[in-house]
Amino acid sequence: MLRPWKTLARRVLLSRPPWIEVGDEQVELPDGRVIDDFPWIRTRDFAIVVAITPEQQVVLERSYKHGPRRVAVALPAGFTEKGEAPLDTARRELREETGYEADDWRALGSFTVDGNYGLCVEHAFLAMDARRADGASATPTGDLEEIEVFTVPLHEALAMLARGDVAQLSSASALALAGLAIHPRSAAP
Amino acid sequence: MLRPWKTLARRVLLSRPPWIEVGDEQVELPDGRVIDDFPWIRTRDFAIVVAITPEQQVVLERSYKHGPRRVAVALPAGFTEKGEAPLDTARRELREETGYEADDWRALGSFTVDGNYGLCVEHAFLAMDARRADGASATPTGDLEEIEVFTVPLHEALAMLARGDVAQLSSASALALAGLAIHPRSAAP
Image (cartoon, rainbow over all chains, first blue to last red; front, side):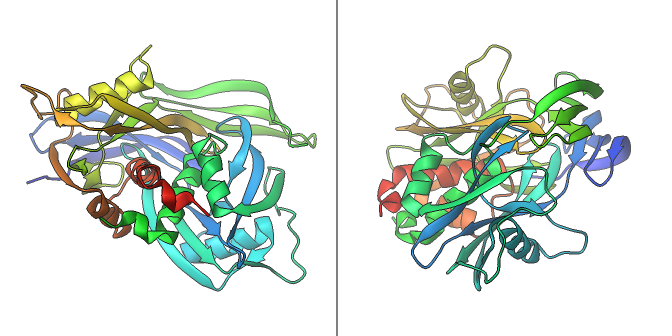
């Protein structure tokens, strides 16, 4: 009964490869209405990681991000490179940003960031039994932000989330999904 | 020690009021580097609602959304109107989209949707003791999408989330945050 929209035409209005592309579409709704200029935005898909140490600590970052325009608590994350599987992005970003590695990876879900305009897909992962790699440097490589890496118990990370210390929806969503996944009894009737 | 970026100049490249504005900024990083064209995107802030009935059912929607380009499970949500408090948006959208009302409202958090470019802010709410309003029509008013409204127990909603039935990050994040808020023991050590 619920039917998809049809795209009748599509154009690009602004292109900033490889970061952003913006345009609009002429779409036909199931009831026959035609919208001439429904916008779309395309940015880069990314992976984000909730890494838990053997001591049940979460690997967190503190950094300034220009989207929320403030210093806040966040999770390791980064754009998927061309042809890179999201899990490989997650492993790479965890290592590059924090110096941690893990063998036990679980998918927490993949979600379209904007319901109307698309934007990109968040691929969220849980990495259990995470440990600092031998010879790892926690100095971020190639990114613009300065990052401080620290660990806290999961319940403290969730308390930070509840009191507004997390600014970005990407980190908030992954941390909440991880909290549910690690304590599955919370999902039982 | 972590310092914010400085915006030295800012321009608008694309404007589609009241929906989207895109531009770039010349920013100065704390280490002195200057980036000439760091993008920003501005869309409209929105509120999203996890409404729980006295029978512990979650009020859900099924609809086609053009961002993920598929029919999926989602939560009631909508843009804040000019000057409207996010909680008022949440109450209005819950009523307009589903016909439900509630008196017991709790904030689940406000998060910037894109860490780099900004985009907009999601305001997530939990509405307890939600009931169908007298004379309520569940026919959506003024939106483009057809919506089916249904209710399931919270544990079933979280199972839908875990198995990929939720397509949008907005709904996934709010549902996961609600799951944690309703079962606070899951956040305990």
